[in-house]
Image (tube, rainbow over all chains, first blue to last red; front, top):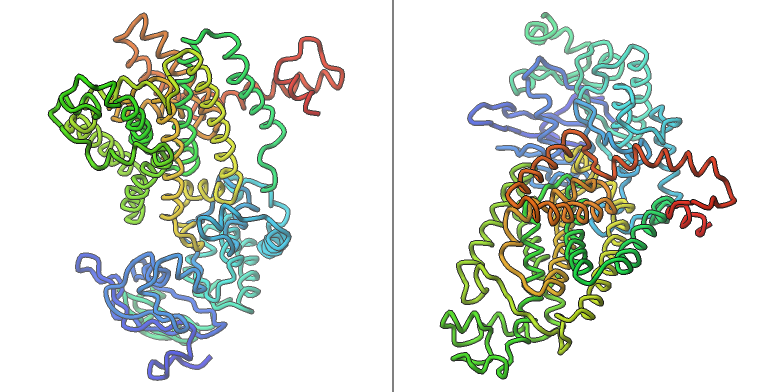
Length: 254
Length: 379
C-alpha cells in the first residue's frame, strides 16, 4: 500500500474524503478531515473517545449531514445523497451495538438485506426463490450461523448478533464495508473467528473498521488512521503510527 | 413461505370467523341486533388497518377516525344528495339542496358537492379522498422522520381539527348533527329490514376481503419489513430501503381500510356525524385493536365485536361508568396481556386444542368443537 497522496487524482481511490467538517452547535466533531481508501484496502480508524471516529462513519453513510467538504465514492458525491441511495451505491454500515431485527429469524434478517425488492411494490411482490435461499445459506455459512437460520435473532449471543449484522451487510454485496467496533464485547475465541471472517471479507471488499482492541488492529489493518479531536493525527502502517510520538502522547501512551 | 397465504391453523381460524359472522350471527339474531353487529364490524376494518400499521409497523395513529369519517362522509354526501331531490325538498326555500344547507341560508349546492351526485365517483372518493389525505399526512411526517409518540399526537390533533372544521362549517357539512336522514341508495330504500340484512352481508364479505388483503401484505416481504422497521428503523434504512415510503404506504392502506368501514357504517346506520371522527372514537378504535391483539388481524375483528358489545350492554346500565371501564380495560391489556385476546388464545387455548386433537385422531369425536369439525372437513 502506497502512502495516500491528496495531490493525486481522487478517482484512483475507492473513497476520497476531503476537507470534511461537521459542526454541532459550533462544536466541530470532525474538523477539515481528509483521507483516502484504496480498493481492497482494510483501513482501521483508531483514536481516543470523542475523537470523531463514529461521526466519520455517520457522515459517510449519510446519517449525519456534513457542514463542509466532500465524500466521493467512485464517481458519486455521497454528501448529497440519501441513506438508502448510499447503500445502493455500494456502501454498507454496521453499527456499534448489534443492530438486527430481534423479532425475526436469522434467515429473515439476512433475507431482508438481500438487495432485491427494495421498493414498496418490489417488497410486496418479492418471492423467496432459490437464488435468495442459496445466497442466505452461503452468507450464513460464512458468519458461522448456518445451523441457526431458524433461530429468532433475539436469543443469539452478543457475538453471534455482531456476526449476523456483518452478514446482513455482506449479503448486500457492498464495495465498501464500514464496521464500528466489530469485536466489542466478544470472547477471545469469537475475536479470532471474527478476524478470520474479516480476512475472508477483504478478498473482495474494501473495509473501514473502527476498533479499540490493539491486538486485533495489528492483526487485520493494512493502514491505520489515528484521529484526535476531529482531525487526522497520524496515518500509515501500524508500526508507523505506533512509533509516532504524537500518537503515543495522546493515545497509546495512556 | 411466501406462496402460502395462511397456515392450516389460520385457514381454520378464518373459516371459524367467517362461519360466525356469515352464518351464526344472521341465524340467531333479530335484525336490530344484526344491524348492531354490522355496525361493530365496520370498526373491525379500522382495527385491521391498525394491526398492520401499529401492531406490525409500530406506527401508532390516534387519528384513524379521520379516515373512517372521510369514507363515511363521502358515502353520506351521495346518499344525502339522492335524498334531497327537488320533490322531497319542495318546502325548502331552495329546493334540491340538502336540508341543512337550506337551514343555514346556503342557496346553491357547493361545487365540491356536485361530483357526489355520481355513484361511481362516490365509490372512488370513499377510498381516494382518505388515502390522499393519509398520503399528505404521511409524507409530511415520515419524510421528516417524525415518529412514535409525536406522530400519535399529531394524528390526534388532526382528528380534533377535522372535527372542529366539520362542526364549524355546518352549512356545508351538517355541523354537529352530521349528515342525517339518508334514505335510498340508487332508489333502493336502505332503511328497510331487508336492506339492512343485505348490507350486513355486503359488509361482512368486504371485511373478509380486507382481512385477506391484510394477510397478503403480512406474509409478503413487506410484512417482515414492517416488523423490522418497528424493531430497528435505522438498520432498515441502512439496508437500502426508503423507510418513509414504506411507512406512507402502510398508513395509506390502513386509511383505506378505515374508509371502507366508514362508508359501510353510513350505509348501515343511516347517518354520519363528527362524533365518529374526533379524538375519542379514534382512541376507541386503537383499543379495539389492542384488546383483540395488535398483531392479529382476526383478533382485531373479535376485539371490535367484544368491546363494542360490552360498551352497548354496559352503557345501557351504567352510562357514566363506561369510559372508566374502557380505560381500565386498556390498562389491563397493556399491563397483563399486551398481545390482547389473540395472545391469550395462542398461549392458553391453542396448546389445549393441540392436546385435544392429538388425543382424538382420525375418527371425529361426536362432541367435536366447531374448529375441529371444520379442520376435519378440510382434510
